[in-house]
Image (cartoon, rainbow, N blue to C red; front, side, top):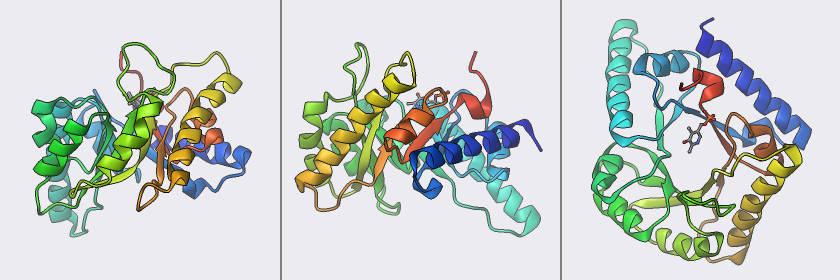
Length: 243
Ligand SMILES: *Cc1c(COP(=O)(O)O)cnc(C)c1O
């Protein structure tokens, strides 16, 4: 087994154990492998190990990898005669206006939307032959300075507007809480995001309720799952340190 395959198994074990501890079904938490700064070969290794959803922070780097993996899969299919599994690419980094066309043309999800203008551009620029872009709004859940994301009080209004855009599907919320001193403190931060998520769904303002709460990374995935995360975004524990 390769190192990445072994690491993936360990991360899936952590997710399963956290679900067991929280009394949740392990099938209710998806794993997003965050491959930023690692090459296409590392992603291919993870694909061979059964991982199909990947997160990228930097647009140009992500698009390059998306195209490289598409070529690799086409070569593999030609060689083996076995159709390749579809990969799912999530943009999880800041998106400037001048990058929306690239993002809309290549990614399947954008988890880092925090402005209506960016959402509008993504909707307008989503190519008609592709499925609608799946969207999470990024929330600055602990008011961390210098952090992207909407203030919690602003989330519901933007959610209502994004849900109306024709080429987007509003799927949920994403947050990156500050590192906490211990498990209990981490759970409390994640629980704030879960409470906001539940509150907006309960308000009944969305025709389709949100189904994705993207919370938890290498250091805090157990706390995130305890609080109700449905998607953990893990980089370091799968691909190694980013130096
Ligand atoms: C880098 C990154 C991750 C992964 O963090 P690790 O600590 O390496 O697991 C998750 N989410 C976002 C938004 C990131 O930028």
